[in-house]
Image (cartoon, rainbow, N blue to C red):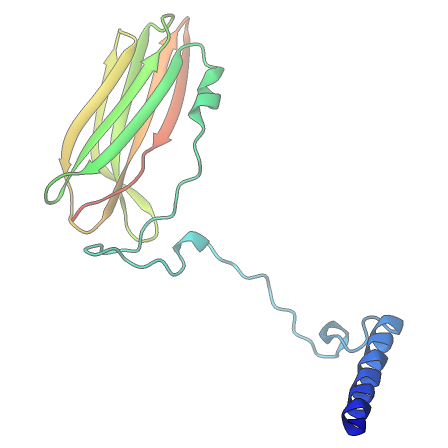
Length: 183
C-alpha cells in the first residue's frame, strides 16, 4: 500500500510541476516558437459538400452539392408585379425528365413570362442543355411544361427565369429547382 501511495504522490507531483511550469511560462515549447517552422497555407476546399459522397446506383457522377436556400417569398414580397415563382424536374421513364415552371403576377402586371432551361451536372459544374422554352402571357400566370430526352446516369435540374412587367418596369427572378437523376 505504501508503495502504491508513493507512486501516486510522485506522479501527482510531476503533473503539478508541469501545470505550474506551463502557467508560469506560457508559449514555451510550442511549435510556433521553434526555429525552421513551415507555416502551411489554409486548406482550400472548393466544395465540401462533395467530399465523400457516394454515387447513387446508376449515376455516372457524384451527386451535386445542395443549392443555397432560396427564400423567394421574402424576395418577392417587395415586388409590385412578379408575385410567385416555381419550378420542378422529375425523372420519367428511361432517359427523360419532365420540367415545369410557373410565374404568377399581380393584377397590376401587364405581362408575365417564364423560360425554363434544363441543366446537367458534369461532376463539377452545371451546364445548360439547349432547350429553353419561353412562354409569355397577358394574363396573371405563365407556365411551361415539357418532357426532355436526356443522357442516362446524370443529375439534372431546371434553371428558370421568371419575369413580369407593368408600368414601364420589369421584375426578374431566377430559380433553380431540385435535382433528378435520370436512370
